[in-house]
Image (tube, rainbow, N blue to C red; front, side, top):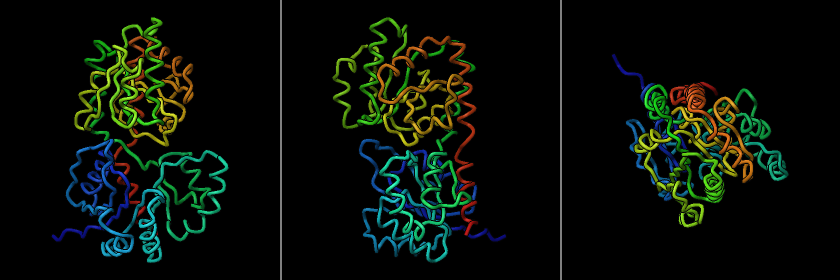
Length: 364
């Protein structure tokens, strides 16, 4: 029996991460497709080691100018094409050529509608060329879907759920809620984020150190994983040097489960975070969540009072309130919240992500 020919799927991507590779692996494993991936260089502040699955061919963006890239991508004869936003003019050129040829072209975005003047002005400038470039939009959540609709995409041509955690990697950690964490819940907060201005590391260290010094932290500790431009500044600050704060540095994706198994609650104090796949990862792993209201993923993975709480982004007093609220919970309450997180985290995965790709192949 002759195998069915594989359909060609093109991804024009910026910085790839392990969770995206997991989605590609699920796609080529469960569906008759081959993937052509054009990517930007790996971010030096997040140097993940990633092995590409079979049937995924990689093209390095920086090796080709816009005209060469268009020629190469048209040669792949893609059935559908996906592009990360509209930051790369070469990607837009390629999508316009494919769109003219009747190929579904999908704008992928995590940008939320905020209703600011700059966004309103941008709507009118973007609508004409967007219509000639993209046929569909695939975004992360409801605020992003609203933005896509205002940009001119029909609601029937907008999908949500563009990001998915590698749920199979993190879900087994939630099993600890019924074993090790049930015997003794780890009183350890974990923050996973690059040390850049919008992530709020200094704010977090200040608030946690204050809780410790005022006797409100009980036996809790804070671990932070990541690196970045502000790493040394935060680590050398008075609060960053607190004896109950540990800076782990960059942790490879393969090593994160071992770190997470030793921690109990996830905290992300970002002042700007369009989505945050790391939230999905920790929800699937059964972590209660402490998130700023700037973290877009709270829409899908946080139910205030049920599996964590929100605090106002950039507000030291409200972050302190949220931290002490969580640290005052009993272990029984923490376990219950972790169970809610796990259920929410398992509600979207790479298999569901891959099904959306296949649906878009059929839409012309």
